[in-house]
Amino acid sequence: MTQLIGIVGSGIMGNGIAQVAATAGYEVVIYDINNKSLKNAEETVDRYLTKDVQKERLSIEVKNDIVNRITYTTEINQLANAYFIIEAVTEKMEVKEKLFSELDKICNPDTYFATNTSGISITGIAGAIDRLDKFIGIHFFNPVPVMELVEITKGHCTSDNTVEAAKKLVADFNKDSIFVEDSPLFVVNRILVPMLSEAIFVLSEGIASKEDIDKGMLLGAKHPIGPLRLADVIGLDTLLLVQETLYFETMDSKYRPPSLLRKMVRAGLLGRKSGEGFYKYG
Ligand SMILES: NC(=O)c1ccc[n+]([C@@H]2O[C@H](COP(=O)([O-])OP(=O)(O)OC[C@H]3O[C@@H](n4cnc5c(N)ncnc54)[C@H](O)[C@@H]3O)[C@@H](O)[C@H]2O)c1
Image (cartoon, rainbow, N blue to C red; front, side, top):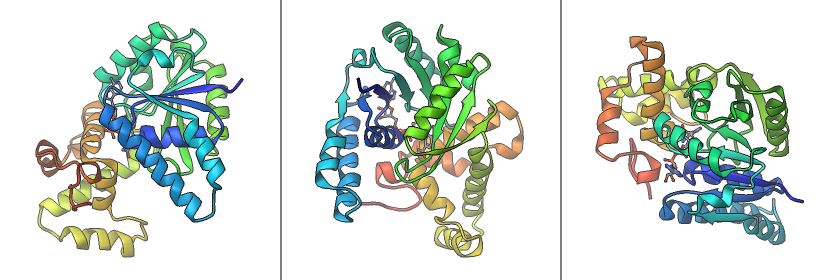
């Protein structure tokens, strides 16, 4: 029988993870509390796969099979019999804890739980549930269908069996992985996020225009995308929450988030997902 993957959160990351899981042949249920986000996720997956069909990387029949393997729902009970749950909700400890505590009661005792957190402690989130041994960090990168890497992180009580199951899942998803200790922001974001933060400080100090900051890193450091445009792709609200984790966990002032970033989030300028961040979209 085809195994079921439950995705929680249908935002930027959730819809990409759902697409990759369905492409790997799994049945997928994607659950969100927000109907609009689910609708948007469905359209995003369809748009991505349609592009693949147009570029002749995928037949229309295969595209339809992938689309038909994904169910979009606001009913959390539909996740009860999942083989693996992958959580991709808002980057807040209290939101993730409450969700996993509810899932722990609903789901089959054999169900594995994974979080896609960008940097919150895996052991900390697992504190909300009884199945501590079945909890693991699987951190995907944005955009999920394109990026090859995931970071796998064990919590203090994660069993070897769960690590093996996660590794197999990641291999099925056709992703490569690195293994990272449970530490704020893991590896990639620990290095990347301070660079994005510095770009925002450079902008707010009036050292260069946003276009020249991005051009500087594109041409001068051979980055594939400028740091301010990348911040818009990530979502400025998520970026701020991730920076706060690094700052509060280390209590090191070098990681303080730029006040410009905080102001933009308060103004609802969240980047590409809200139509405007450092740049305007749509
Ligand atoms: N954006 C990125 O580049 C990126 C990259 C890697 C990891 N992540 C991580 O992935 C997670 C999700 O990030 P995102 O960018 O997709 O966020 P997002 O804001 O695009 O989407 C979050 C979704 O979660 C839903 N949600 C919130 N609370 C919920 C709940 N209790 N139950 C069900 N759904 C709920 C929201 O309605 C929304 O649709 C975060 O932990 C983030 O740190 C993000």
